[in-house]
Length: 221
Image 1 (cartoon, rainbow, N blue to C red):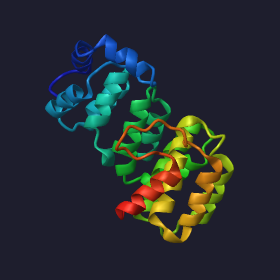
Image 2 (cartoon, rainbow, N blue to C red; image 1 turned 180 degrees about the vertical axis):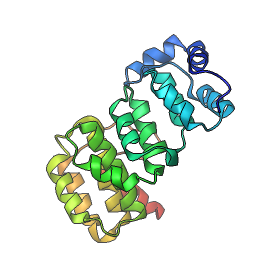
Image 3 (tube, rainbow, N blue to C red; image 1 turned 135 degrees about the vertical axis):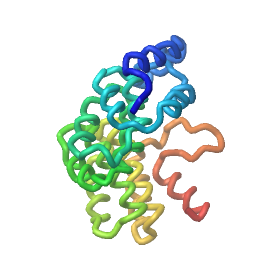
Image 4 (spheres, rainbow, N blue to C red; image 1 turned 90 degrees about the horizontal axis):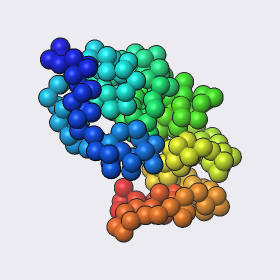
């Protein structure tokens, strides 16, 4: 059981706000200005507590929801709860953390993947593609990889940004992990040119699928 109230936790987070950091974050879809290392320190002090996480999530406060994602136990959340949380995220970081810290570690991951993959909402589909990438890498048996490439080929160019990014990740990982489909994945990436001009810092791997595939294959990934 948490030793502080939700109101106290939100007040503590508010005290960590940096207006300059908020201005930068808001340009990237994140309504907070908190150093995430400091937020993680708060989460560590509270400890894992899914009931308190639910309480924080219900505040609809972005920093509170981020803190909630750090202290919730994925196994304690039903598929319907995770789905509702996804649809109520108001921050790019909250969406990312929900997918990576909760959905990917949930015992309901495959149920959620199937639910989101064909959803009418693009952000839900993006989450579905992220979970599909996990399957591509870790448990491809049963996946129609050629069918995934067909859909990527049809939809990647016109997909909304978040979905496009997640779909592109699936494309790259099919090419990296499945040599028999590598040539096709490279061909799709080269023809569509999605993220070809994405600014990439020195010594970082480009998200452009052909470059990403080539670099990971070179490394023996």
